Image (cartoon, rainbow, N blue to C red):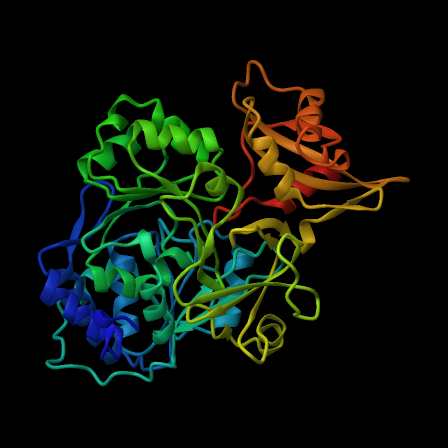
Length: 498
């Protein structure tokens, strides 16, 4: 717990303190112009909390937020949290089967739903509050004085995994987790930041960062959809954005925008979902005047590792940096014993940001968490000599070519350095005799002059073992992503078997 959060017991405390300290500062800006100050956020969420309590909602009850990223989402999340109830968000891109599975597991006492912008609402025998009804509840008479703080170890939020490894799992967190996340944010957060947010509010990047926003008075500016480089440059300039994230392709396109050269408020950029090649890191620093940093996190631990602005471009590209404040990372063998630096092993994580468990799922919780607090991430990686963590992929992504293990992420990073490659993904395909071969899906930098398989094989062999070079090449316009904007390898594998 940091000095600024010492003595804080609840979200209710944080909201009141933020309203007193940052009252007129904007907390949220929506596309189209809707704005909410910290004072308004406090007042409206307090009123909504009173209205929900009058309807019978109490501490420990789960509320499912089926809303798009918006001011209303933020008010509902805060209202639920200050009652001591448990908020959970459902990504608007989820399909009916995924929504039903989550609602079955969460067993919410209430669903808040946007019929137009939310995910599909299945036939359920549960109370539903529509988004259109919220405005009438914001003026509900709120109680005077401080609410009784809930147990800081009680659940406060459930965040659902993307489902790339099966049925979505609900990682749950308490107040201690939210405060630990605020303490470990590092270069990502500074008092008074104005952050451009493109990830859905149901994502851990928002749900787990509530305390961080309130403590530092950070303004969240919701990115418009669909994305364009011109729109991003305009909103970054007009809204005085200080922190922004984007995939490498977006940063590359932004460099071509004349308006992007006039961003005096921007202090740091985040390379999201894929590593940024060193030449792109250097170009962003030269033309925009800001560093690109990398963060390694997951739903089960929204804070783990990160690079620093002063790290050289090669470190930003090849690694995910070092453990952030309060977090430990170990690379181990299958029995949990540390392996020497340079050797690939299982990544384990421990610290205040790690989830308390999977919601109502003791079996999978026991599989993920050790008795001494380590989270088995399911990722494979190694440390370099400087202590930077290098990811090589998930165990399920590995394929075996002629008896040799190939980790796709290592090959993808190498392909991404080729000047003709914008993005790349590699999956294994079963084949007789040799076992599996690597199939590279590539988004070319110039569709009119894409790289050839021979070029990419030669490029890879010059940098990695020859058996890691892709055996087949598939040119695509885009790579598929999950609802949480992660690369969807299952979709690529389905294409191979289709």
